[in-house]
Amino acid sequence: MIVKFVPGGEASRRKPARRDKPEMTLDRALSRAGAASRTEAARLIAAGRVRVDGRVVRDAQAWVAPARQRIALDGRPLRRPQPLYLALHKPAGVITSHGDPAGRRTIYDLIGERASWYFPVGRLDLDTRGLLLVTNDSVFADRVASPTGKVEKTYRVVVKPPLDDAALERLRAGLDIGRGERSGPARARRAGAAVEITIREGKNRQVRRMIEALGHEVVDLLRIRVGKLRLGDLAEGRSRSFRPGDVI
Image (cartoon, rainbow, N blue to C red; front, side, top):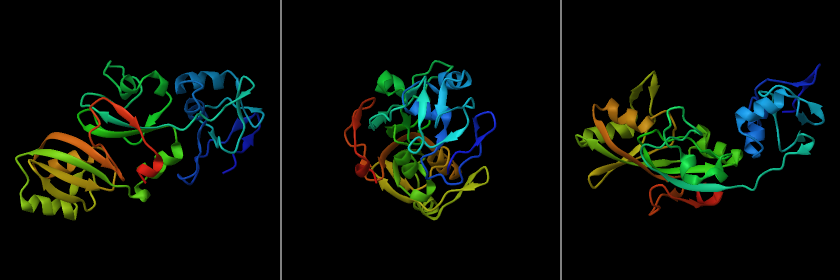
């Protein structure tokens, strides 16, 4: 999509039709480049300090394509940061947002301020532990998170009471998980005292809702794999680098 300009120098706010194109809002483009947080970027844009292809754009929600357009802040072009890919073992009680009004710990407290412009690929809820991918590569993130990509995620779940064979078959067939949604067929098998569940979707709190739909309680939920990448022996709260080919 070519961003069109209307009189007054404002960019089009029409959302791109395709999700696989590397397009984003202007405030996000600045934050992804490490120039500012999205809140600060919005202020810079409103102040007329940002130009796209030589034109001042004051709309933080204007859609742009950083790979194809010249975006400059105070006359200096944004430079694409070096790609970074981190696998983090997220502990329970840590949220995936950047900053929290309630003062809870976030993944950025674990990976450091150097990563303040990076973002998680999908989310793990507050009480879920395990493998979380963090990157500044939006194209890679879209490939992993998009339902059309069908990248598998495997979880190890401790359930109370334990699931019987009939419950495992219901997981394998797919089931109603509430809110008008249905989980697709999953792979499910016993793994000692736990159950390993593999899905290709990313519905909100999906695995928890699948277990609750069976009338059982999740005692512990750990994501152990995303695509080809496994959590392995990565210690809780620690991170390590990976390459996109390690996942997809």
